[in-house]
Image (tube, rainbow, N blue to C red):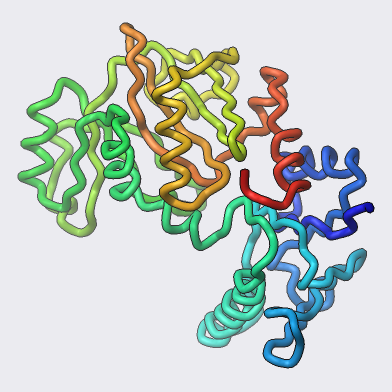
Length: 319
């Protein structure tokens, strides 16, 4: 019997990575309904009923091209959705309206009991705290560079003085503009002379630099593990994608099992890990992005990443 349950794909309008997965789902004749929360209104409506029917959640999600029965969703691919900002409203009304969408549309979707989430947004959020990431990595036996999180200038200077090189990293990527120009939080070197009393305003993350020769981006999809070695010569390879070269490699079995256990700890079925490789082939865990980009890596290596996502979403159950 053909399974007509749809896959929901929540993402922004221009998302080439989601397009790759949807193309794979189309090849399997799996119904797909794509939507973006920012389209709430004429282009997106939701109706949910509770307590008056056998299903825990009954109702529909409607887009201009699809009507989805919420009680019969196969899986949800929570890619890069954008929530509405209601810029045409005053500040107070905009905050009120935005909250109603998050807790109305979002809450209805979160209440769905049947589908597989890749990944559930609440679990993504829980896994996105860097201090928790560091502690879990260390608990699972992964090698973590010496790291300090502090808002004490004295502690920061002391830490930097103890290590040959130290970088500053943001604890959470946040959209930011200065003089109208977007600012990105790279992993930037920092010296004791740069530490002043402004450090007291918020916690900062300082980390000893790994004497690395390459980086690994590890994408886990269900129980499939894709490992790409990135050669760059840069402290932060994201600064210049044109200078990168890629090749598929394997992980030591111990490290692969630790990364799978890492995702299990947070209840995730997918995630992207960044790992540094030193000159002795030692692996240094850097961070997890629960919803990291990977599309350009498939194009560069030929690894079947989008097919793995399509397989997982088609099955509709966690492996």
